[in-house]
Length: 252
Length: 164
Ligand SMILES: Cc1cc2nc3c(=O)[nH]c(=O)nc-3n(C[C@H](O)[C@H](O)[C@H](O)COP(=O)(O)OP(=O)(O)OC[C@H]3O[C@@H](n4cnc5c(N)ncnc54)[C@H](O)[C@@H]3O)c2cc1C
Ligand code: FES
Ligand code: FES
Image (cartoon, rainbow over all chains, first blue to last red; front, side, top):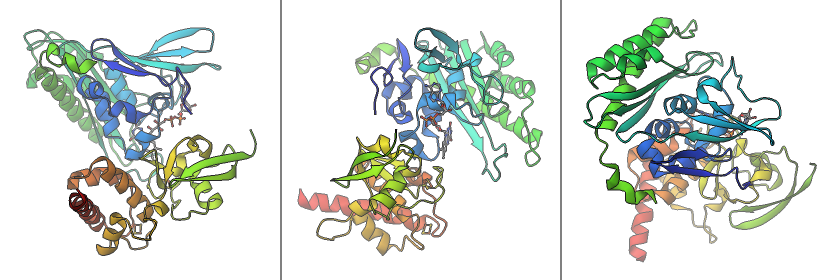
């Protein structure tokens, strides 16, 4: 049952991504530009288990469910997603960072629904990455996972970081960006040392929820490792980015 | 919405049955259409026992509403066997490799593997592991299942080459 207008999905490296509420995760995973330019989102979808869920669940459903251990929202924080909410007569736009509110709460008011999700186009020399670490979940209350996503844009010489986002999830009610770490990286050279230092800041900035079986030190260490790895991978993707003109023919 | 006639295209045949809006696809397939090869185990999307193909893609029928599946071409494990009774190469390979013990997961394994081989006729071992990562087997330990899928892929390709 596809409703026209709610089933819209477009992705273009110069224009951005637009996703309607009926668009299944699999449709994004199979799109060439999502894989090439929105790699963090692509990886979050590819690593979703079981894979069947990709053929059944929607992107916006995953976001609106507001479950704190889901992966797609963390990648969308890194890509600076914007949601459009409508009640049929008025629409408003909400950045994903302002969308979540308390445990399983969202900005959706009674009578409203999310009608669109947009991702801005990445910079010319930019890359992104998503990673997660998890262990088997034995009880419903187990805190079993940490995930992280990053986006890095480099200057024309592909040396200095001109824009960066770092998001960590599964640590509280919703994912968070780490402004301290982002500020520390901005205008720095994209080096391993810079990423290690930023990851250290990320680990210090977050006091993750913990449970008896999983002490804070372990979760903090996982945050550090994930932050370091997503930053390094996003930067290496930004570095290996070739001239956009070379693959312009793929855009149409 | 109350009871209504639902039309389903299952294994290439059109089947009509009375459904209610809340009914799950797995229950309609098993109880209304009598195709009990599809199993219901966790009913939460975690185990894959209930996997059927909808327009060629594996979905958990335990999380799919029957009303929403009427416009899709559905395939269940009963549709794998050819009309003359010959088993599908995947089914044959599962027998030859002893890839089933209690058999509860087998229908789901077969359907997910079929979707994989339809999309990717020469999968690597990693591809098979990835595709089957949402299908849980409590008995066999997966090695034989993966061997069987790889063997079936080879046999299907060999048969195709002979035919060509
Ligand atoms: C077994 C299993 C494993 C999973 N594993 C993962 C995983 O590893 N990582 C991960 O990130 N996710 C995982 N998921 C979550 C899965 O991706 C989501 O459940 C799915 O994407 C939700 O999409 P849906 O279309 O079914 O939404 P629904 O279940 O229909 O909706 C979810 C919620 O959002 C609300 N909602 C939906 N659309 C809108 C809208 N347009 N406006 C306002 N509110 C709306 C609904 O009212 C409901 O409360 C898993 C799910 C299952 C069942
Ligand atoms: S019964 Fe559907 S996934 Fe387990
Ligand atoms: S054979 Fe028993 S669950 Fe797989």
